[in-house]
Picture 1: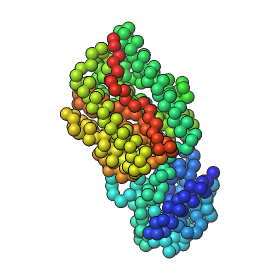
Picture 2 (picture 1 turned 90 degrees about the vertical axis):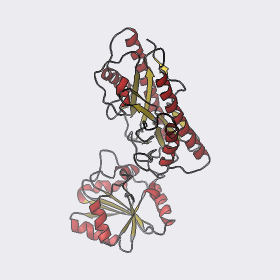
Picture 3 (picture 1 turned 120 degrees about the vertical axis):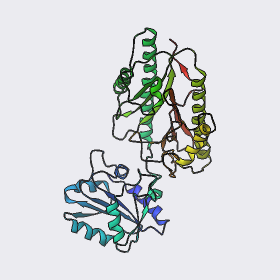
Length: 395
């Protein structure tokens, strides 16, 4: 169950950084889920007591686990230190940390990346009181976090195919109901999409977003019984994965207009959002094929500049995108220099959403979300890239 090859790669990285004496993993009740996932610990399994795992730059790896959680140790290569009392744990851990002044842990140097800061303040303070300096572990582990293997990539394609079908049938149903002048609400269309996803063997946390008219100007609108009308923007944001623990998500957002003639303002907003998405894709593709590292913040800047330079500056009110993995919002880099400053790098084998949005309060909003996968071949694969023209559902 353990991953000795992965740990050896970590040790190689430690060997190139003489400042850091080891990687110390800490978990309590599954709070460090990103690391548990790296070691293949099932989602329904986690330490119920304090857990530590030491990977020193030199010397044996050590698992520190409470006796009631001994089964957790099977996922981590190394020698086993069982404890029952807090005195046992602190004594044994400090003994193994002797001579190790600087430790890499799941922490960050500022408040700007809360998803990385899973080390609790009390544990950090205790270690510092015992003479240990703490450095962020992310530079050591980042190329492994959220990286899909070949089977997961196949599952990604299948999840994307499920969403493609769900969108196609949802637009078809919406058109039929509007043509027949049979009212359909946001929640009814939402439930229909969920049935398709589940019927195709998919699953998802939460429910898709269906937002019509002015509701589409609310980025995470909670769908209501409001009826969808002719001559409105309809925004659908849906995500799903295959119903298997190792399966990654796909996550799309698309829009359509329920009328024959596109209003000029609607067309202009769509064109700017589509150009912003296209620019982000081009930036990633160029950097990736030329072996140029890129941070999530840099991708956000590339995308956001298009909207900032338009007449809709100020109406793009969220980050450009996020990592996608076992959770729809994955543990890797977010494409963000707006809500936070994400200086983590996009990685080979990683999947990311690109979803610029423009939201005109009390009028309408347009968000265009595609997914981009960075292939080992230095090519990219796109899912649900925005069309060049906004789709009209003629009624």
